[in-house]
Picture 1 (cartoon, rainbow, N blue to C red):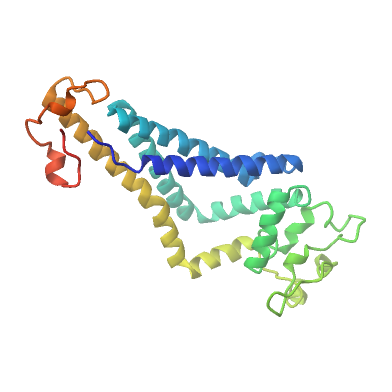
Picture 2 (picture 1 turned 60 degrees about the vertical axis):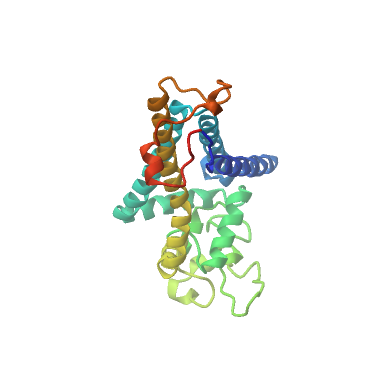
Length: 280
């Protein structure tokens, strides 16, 4: 039986993500950034890459050897990941307030280490400029940072990063001290100085405004996994048909006469899906 499945593609993607994660983690360690490793994107990429590579390798090996056990491990693992992703999305929607609070709490933890963690700093600066926001829940979250706290002795005290500042022209570079002492002023007095909306609210508003893009992104993530589960099930069924037809089935690598044997009948899956491989 020939195995023409996207397992190698998944394996290559996993290896690519793993390589990017390792490179990013090496660069991160050079600068001694972030105490909480699970806030680091590099660690997330490494874990994701390892899982994808191992699961895909099992799928490749199982399809090459027509090993039902390995194929089932691949199918069940992929199914579990798909179910967990769907369940996580549903729970995030059902418990929206708790999800937002958890996100705000993690952002505040990151703000504490803002100047010590280059990963988080770059992400936070990008988010604040992209979504025109400041802080997590609101701009006053910057008080938790030791440099921006109003009791700090430096020039950043009672201020916010310049990425929070309002710009009026495209590609305008904000003054790095534009957020000076803004935490001492009332909220409404800062509308023309900094973005007073928190980044979590700004992010969810952006999701609602761009729901078509997000739907396409989710389909791009979930459909390949669903396709992998279906194809794995079809292939397992095909192998089981071969075993039932021949009794003690062995593949061509183990039986040199396998190519000369004629199938007694087509498997039920081959009748349903003409694209499935024939048994020769």
